[in-house]
Image (tube, rainbow, N blue to C red; front, top):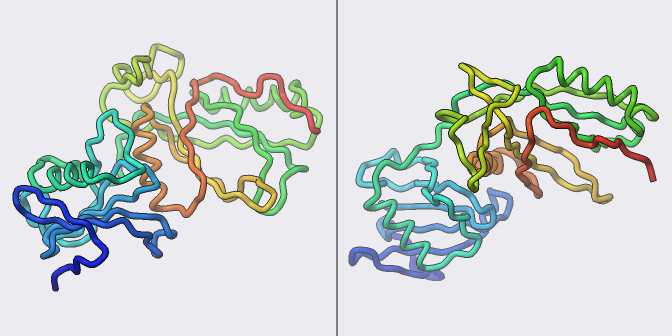
Length: 274
């Protein structure tokens, strides 16, 4: 059965018509999705608009000149250094169609990335101010070894204002460093991402800074609850791609990408209760 043209816009690419529309998807937390399709449904593409995502979903029978299973297949879209659009224009729709029809070599998202090493996230918690699903937590930093993280935790609990004065605990989370290629050569906005610092991953890979993704909801008090956090990424772009996939897994209203210097401490002067 052909797709109805009612309520949809049309573009021409190589003298063939394609329909497109933006509509909220009730099965995906009521967020708007762009859908692009040929009338015979041989090509069907979806892109989540407000998420600023880096991937496109193919559900048609054809994609980049080959037959597909017709089931949902997720591909990274080659935005390069551009920010994924939050407003859909006919120009972007035409670009998307050209990529899906005449492009080649789209990278299928497998969900698996090489592990370059292991780092350790240190978080301290004020137990007295935590309640229900909310924890009053302080992210102290990410460290190259568990021993370093534990030493820093003990120092804070014994010597740093606030942490030593109240009932505080700590947790150390083991985090994989995900990426591809030679970390020491990765660049981000002209800045060296991985330099010759103390923390080393597998096969001598030296890590200077990393990125992590956080998602959370807010309760009636404005506190962050149901917080989810990612493993570590060596570039901001990789973290944003990781965030796009996490949004498919977790129904959270707020998201961010945070950058950490390995073995650098946050909250150096502690805290005081107001």
